[in-house]
Image (cartoon, rainbow, N blue to C red; front, side, top):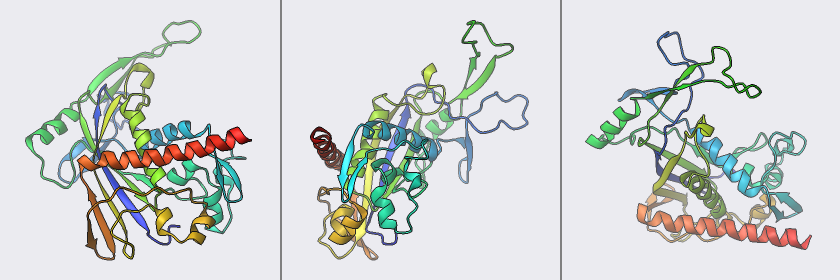
Length: 316
């Protein structure tokens, strides 16, 4: 499926902290004055050392949220029925066990969550880029520079470890941790390749759960950290030339034999948009005012699949 580029999309969004955010670095270094638990940082070529949100951290939250919403469903495909989301910790039943050399067979047997986010047997279609406290690639305005400075004025939270049995403090268990303060904006992108409309809907559904507070980001969630707001800003969709100038999911771009071999699920037409030619591809720019339509179509496609799954379950 990935040997040919049928379509691809980039969803740009802004994430703002509602409560402080703690995404810890793997080590604190040798500075004796540093907090015990520090925020992860990266060095930007223009703006220097800054806190950021690793794309892998956000992708893990999106995946676990999507899996929770899919796990109760089973979906019919050519040759049988499979679950919406496998248990990745069960090596006997998870999608990692599919090791056929025929890529179409592997794709057909992977659950919906693994089709989007990947498994040990198949590459995923969704990639999340690192989130930075400024829009990359543009000249920063006064508001962006202020946000960058505020993001790096981290707060220090003091904590203690409590013995669950006695309820007392565990020895010398006082520790300090850095947190990014509330009200800081981060800018990020989610990239999809060879995707169907329901996969776009699944990404939006997971982002909605994060925006509504049903999912949290980072560590110390039980202490109230990690509540964020998410606002999609714009999208870019590209697909191979040769069809009419309309955005299409991969289910409408491949031939019927390829679709059946890979077990693609029913496709839904994406909203119309103006196209421009870019090399061998057609590019569709979707402004902020139009992103809601794409979200609606994707989530309708996802709801249709869940309806099919309910019919399979009720008829069993």
